[in-house]
Length: 254
Length: 67
Image (cartoon, rainbow over all chains, first blue to last red; front, side, top):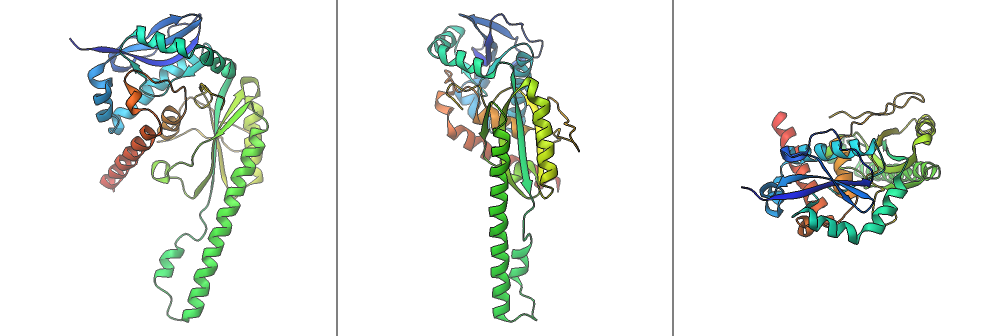
């Protein structure tokens, strides 16, 4: 006999359809109605999803990926049939009663979150510019013998200035792209640049942002991204989506 | 890991597929943050930073193992 907890994926508005996707931990997706909200949950083993279990498992990239994908699959299925407020990964309660109590505390904020995202999806836009002076430091380690010391230092200083100027241009481009895009959408949020060790992108990520876009405006939004890309051939500008409104279904205003 | 990207011209390649990095950006960094019974002591920025550190470490270990 193991202790089971309640894993909360998302909240939507009643009436809701039980999503036809696999639940985490071999559980079964259930709908828990609370006033006019519906919590989408499944049972999980607290040995794995309790505090100690989570601490251990979250260090395991394969476990983390499996749970993140499973969570996302449920959220996406809910998003297909109504407004969705996705919860942070691994939001677990001891039982439905305690979850209801918590939902009740946040009820007005949850309603506002659902209103904010209804009929809208999230798009991601990233921009990467090439790194200037790549390999410059390597060359600086071994000055060519034909250069005098002063020439060598001047060259090193120039390279540093070029890198700094390029970094400023990149940052300005990121700001400009974001301003242009955010002026056309309902809401936007800049996220930290992603770690190159995770993405493997070549260059400097000058924009990593999320945009909340009306479903009817999705084509216009991707057209605008394409236009910005052709105006800035030096950068790699990519849009991804549409995704559930992860960055905008927050309990405070984004 | 592949991600759908907007293609050339005005064509947007759209799809459900989210790269793990993008997904974790969102599932750990944003979304509705409502303290569950379990996650109270794990919640907040610490969780994100600690876990991303773990991810970076394991990704690096994996890529070193492959090379």
